[in-house]
Image 1 (cartoon, rainbow, N blue to C red):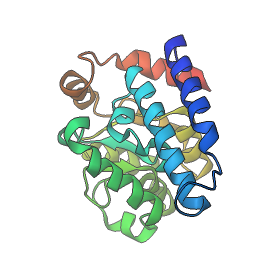
Image 2 (image 1 turned 30 degrees about the vertical axis):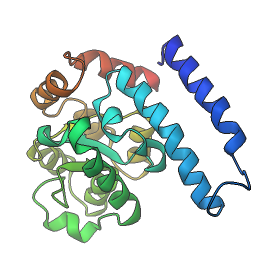
Image 3 (image 1 turned 45 degrees about the horizontal axis):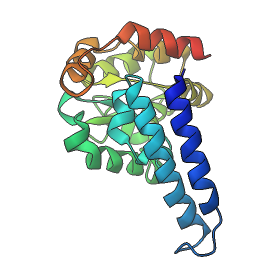
Length: 204
């Protein structure tokens, strides 16, 4: 749950962005304007998530809203927000614009089907569509060497697209050592993994 300071920040950003919505003086068509406005709003949202110990939120930053929140896993060497943001944004866009297929998932060894150092929701959904068992999906997620962070909305999306609750729950705890190292290096110095997981669980 966002603290009061974060809520105020988000409210101020919403007020600031309100005059821009549908403004005829903005360049581009309505779709382009929406992406720009959404990206700015996403930057604020990404910052708020980062303050609440969500490293992937900080990593995506301004692309969070425009990218649709597809990125849910990252390897340690792809987790530095100051160096890897462009890579993360590309992974988000690829997942949105060119989701991987079930046939690609069948032949992949890990859940990082395209091998870009990130796991996105389309890759997890593709494993489900490929008919992989829960055990095989969890094994492939573990093989990525990545840590995972899912919001309650992302968890619901996966379940709505056929991923079992067992797999979703397992993702919270996969490769915790990698998550701890990522937070030590690129977060606020503490992982607080159990607190984050408890908070996500209580969101439902």
